[in-house]
Length: 264
Image (cartoon, rainbow, N blue to C red):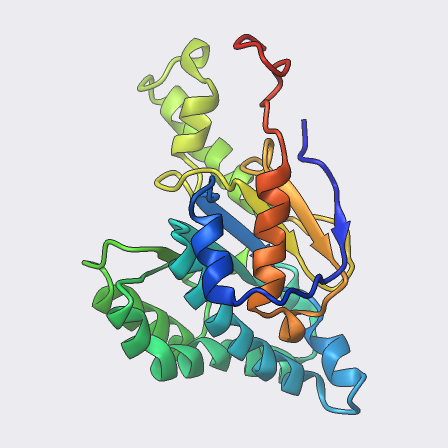
């Protein structure tokens, strides 16, 4: 069963961000938040700017949301940065998007280290440009010993490809006699996904008014709560993030069971 589909409008508040964070931390905070960052191009178009200007502005939002997520006590923040389908975009846009990890990490890596944030990545790493791989590898290496929030970039990631590769690995083990078909279960499948070491997302946020998953974590989002907002990613600020968190905290998560009962 998928999480409840809610489209929210931004809510203003006279209460300071600091006070809201303190209040929210007294209740359940999602351990893993996943975000489909959408709307950079439309943000730029509305201002008669090139699409890459929207992507650059969106990078600033990544910093804001990383900081407030860490302040809230989120354990994992996964950001859908570039999908396997995004290679279909114009070359000039792809080239710019491939440079953004290097620009973001070179600018904010000291801050991430100071905040005890660990940088990770899921996706097909091998086919990325060398400068992109070098920037990500450097950030992962320099934050490897951090034990605070994990900032997980989904880069050149596609859930269907992830599942296909997992099936191939499991089939190979079965063919070699290492694994019997009868023993293939959800735990085995989970262990062959790129997110095997991470908890499943508790909350998925998608910006810009689109209401679809776009080949993102199709297996992992089975019981995730969904939050959709019309706000474009470059305009998605700390208050927007807190609003999504408040909506999450208002939900009753039963995972298939009946409220008040322990059995599904």
